[in-house]
Image (cartoon, rainbow, N blue to C red; front, top):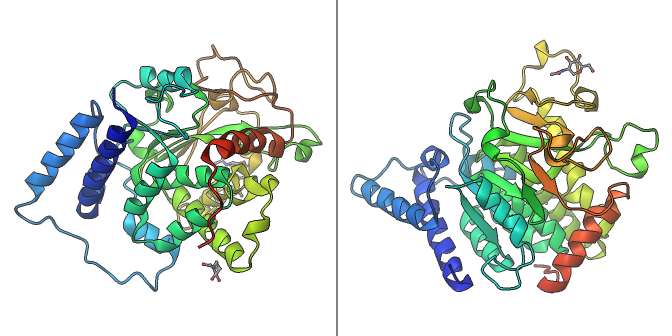
Length: 373
Ligand SMILES: *[C@@H]1O[C@H](CO)[C@@H](O)[C@H](O)[C@H]1NC(C)=O
Ligand SMILES: *[C@@H]1O[C@H](CO)[C@@H](O)[C@H](O)[C@H]1NC(C)=O
């Protein structure tokens, strides 16, 4: 069993090696097949790097990125290759690692390892996240500036999941989730995996007149569990949006007065849902000429099986929210139930549900004062 210090060193080593390799071989690192464990991975990565050393690999020319938009810098740093495999990573974040005695989510964390033998499973603490992001986003300083400027731990936790999936791909899932089935079963067999780059689930489908009292959007996509390939355009867009918004608020001095109930809009499910809906209607990615009208909540309400839109697979509410007993969600034993999320009563305004729960838990242990740089 790794102790926290060794785990940190190992993680930093693996990521450094990956970082170096991915600088020259973007698509190659994205198609990493399923590694056995972190050590073997580090080893094979180190070997791969040695092999690559004598004839220098074709490198991207260093370019002056100062005039580029954040979106373009992100696109340059991490290419999207739809035909690559989904990387065999599971990313989670918490203030402690599972090797610490009083780790609170042992059962939940174990369920992910048990369902995903051969995957690299990392529980990232705050300080590891800082190091990691420095490595992955050093060439895009405004992204790091925005991350450090975010005034609440829950905001950073939200942005971190988009950043790690954008750079490395794999699965992100909140630490309080249980894996019910392997992610290898999430995409239905009739959909070829080389045509899919993002897998998302429905969080809420409140078909009642007062839905706006409870949720920000009529259909809401959940961001407690996401699977993606590196470089996906939806992640590129949400990272750009959050970076822009955060730095605008920082400039105008509004960050210090930021209220917890606005988390859903700045980094949470509202902006996540809007970004995805905009992607579905974006003519840069979809042929709008042949489309039969705007894609909106009506295309997803009441769905019971998964649905593909472009390179995105949308799973029904049962997949990531089974057993909630409402909005058409079926029970844990349903074949479409993939992930279980522990939250107290769901019919509660979302600002009280997710935010209350996460901010309190993360807030007390991390005790990190908001940084304004
Ligand atoms: C945010 O985006 C707007 C519109 O593209 C742009 O004018 C502004 O400069 C951006 N702000 C920052 C801080 O990047
Ligand atoms: C979305 O729904 C509209 C009707 O609301 C329909 O015309 C369109 O074909 C649907 N698109 C997809 C991709 O399902």
